[in-house]
Structure formats: structure tokens, C-alpha cells
Length: 106
Image 1: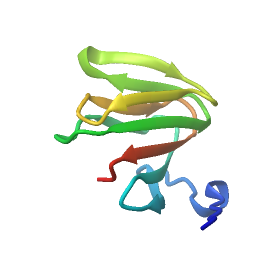
Image 2 (image 1 turned 180 degrees about the horizontal axis):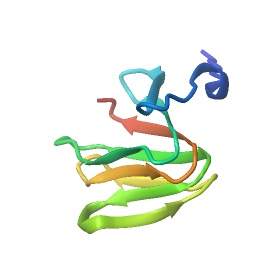
Image 3 (image 1 turned 120 degrees about the vertical axis):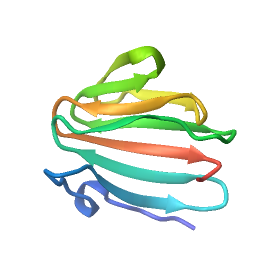
Image 4 (image 1 turned 45 degrees about the horizontal axis):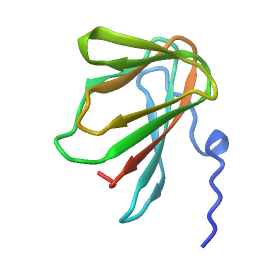
């Protein structure tokens, strides 16, 4: 099965809170698109399960967030890979579009 999703057309921005779109969900993995206005963030959090995630920057700039106040610059084309149980988050400096893949899906 081939499935095309145009995330730039399917998900917009909300000045009050970040927007989320489920791009794909299966028993094997989940893909989400998050859109953040400048200044919005997904606070540092973790999930008490085994697995991995990736966060890919599609557009804009910001920072990947981690434990001990870690801030890693994030720009288009950057990919963060992490265990799901490792603290992670993201902060938007400009309007920011990201693609998150989670395996196994949660």
C-alpha cells in the first residue's frame, strides 16, 4: 500500500497551542506532524516503555530538548534519534514543522 500525505497542506499553525496531525499509524510505527508557532514548545517528557523515536525538522528553527536542560540546535534537515524512555522535547524559535516517528507506536 502506498500512501501520500501532504503535511504542509494537511496541518496548519495555531497561535494558542501547537498543532498535531497523525500522519500514519500501524502496529509497527506511528508518524506525527507537529507544528509550533515561534515560542511554543513540547516540554521535556519521557514514556515508560521500550522503543525509539525520531524527530525530523521540516521547516523553521528551534532546539531539541533533553535531560539536564540540554538544548541542541535544530534546523531543517536535522534528525534527533532517541530512546522513548529518554527525556525529550522541542522548542520553536521560529514557526517550526516537525515529523515524529515512534516505534513501536504509543
